[in-house]
Amino acid sequence: MRIASLAGSLGVILMEGSMAIWKISDHAMVDKFIREKDNEKIQALKAEAFGELEEVKFYKSANMAHPNYTKKEIELMIELVVKTEAYEQGKGWLFRAKRRTELVMEYT
Image (cartoon, rainbow, N blue to C red; front, side, top):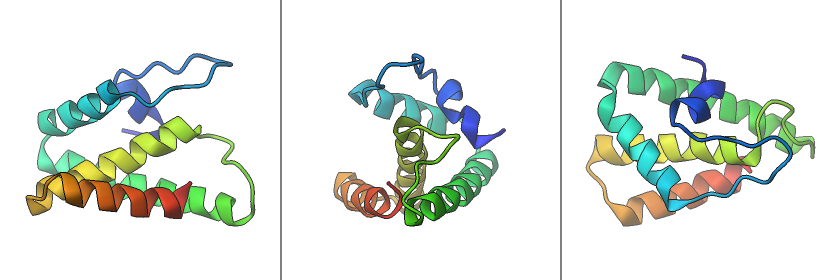
């Protein structure tokens, strides 16, 4: 599964030409998505998300926007990574908040 289709897999509809809004329901969709998949698929998606985020970081260092991903899609990739790590480590909201902040600062 290609990470670019993650937003579609989560049921998030990005309207062309309009600004997407990050909603609480998006967090719930990521959470449900992780719980429904087996561990092997989640690990593969997480690894692919980190690969794509490194590419995003490269564009950010060149002071350019990524041509293939919107900010919304990047935030969804970050949310997938954060939730996956929290489930793996048995951590709660504080870990997720700190980790999300770290990743957003690094990749957006």
